Image 1 (cartoon, rainbow, N blue to C red):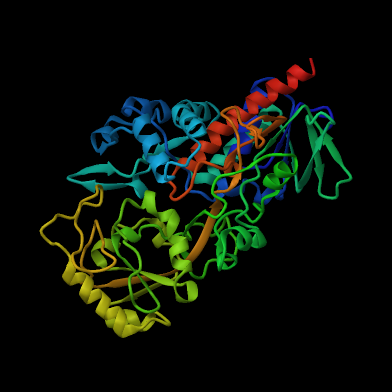
Image 2 (cartoon, rainbow, N blue to C red; image 1 turned 180 degrees about the vertical axis):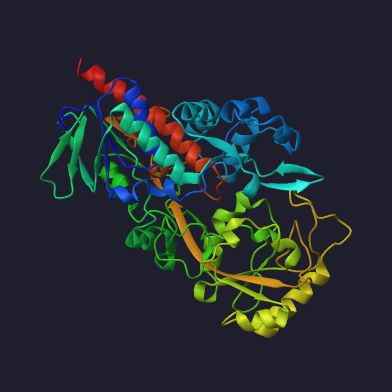
Length: 496
């Protein structure tokens, strides 16, 4: 393909970008995809995810369309329940403090199942999230927290499948190509991009930006997120430095969403500074099954406030505010058996001991006396009259201590004991640009910038105070698909 005769340029190489590329190609456009990363590091943040998708569905028949190889025995041994669109929307909008862009969010919810079916048609294989999102209760897998489906093979398999599909469909890929600015006509129409040095212009009838947020931009983190955020580890792609946001803003896009907010989790204390695709499972998100203490030996969060899907994205901020930006998640033998693979990898910073005193001695820098007192006080505060059930908000909490533990409180009393040292790992930032349901980038008057589209984590206005696990890949797919097809149509109309 002559790079100056393509119809649509996609900037980015994650899930949203690939969905945009595929849908633009399906609409008949000649598509060029520019990926800043080298080939071996392609995939953006999506490659680092577990591959969970939050989707609206009415019953298990909807899921069988996504997972046609579900066996009757699996259905008999699991309760998939339902997750209606009304519940999906209400949970997501309430978690934003009712600040979310309701029109775009509603579009994401309403199109979630149809878009997942489209991904299935494009080779993506889905499976139930048995290992991370279900517990066996009374002999049945019970899914919890609104998540039941993931990509088989995780986020890396998702992007590799979509890359293969896009390449087979004729999408041209250019790696190690960093776009730095947009090419615009005098009337404001976006007709291409400039590369790193500004010398090369790649022209097209429309451009889709899908370069992620700015979580890997240390200076922007310090500027927008605030004190200490330059110290956070980067959980995902090192290439998400805000390039697309910067290009769009300079072209007249309006800044949108929560620019001081981000998705950040408990992350292994000794994880690398940037995400490494060969060292996944650095996050430690099942703190709901134990307690979390800081270097002073004190608890500082309600570990059982809600399912981890609704609270985990705020834990990075909590630990960053602790002395030394370090904490320990502590479990005993009973709850440790319920932990998923991210706690069992060899590279986990894990301490094990047969007594709490021995465990404290291994927790470097902790106030041992205060820690032991915290555990004793916590154990004594548990309401043992309520049964423990990890698959629902069981109400088994504590009384008379601060902070409380609202659900899943179990005494730390059965050896061996385990502690996992954690810090803050930032996943992505919430601030970005404003789009409509077609993925068109909007200016301060809500007027679309001609031939400019955006998708994925650079879209602002969907997440604010909290984040519902699995919604990111869903939103990237839905908006990316919409942006691609509408960009293709706009380009093809303009060029006759």
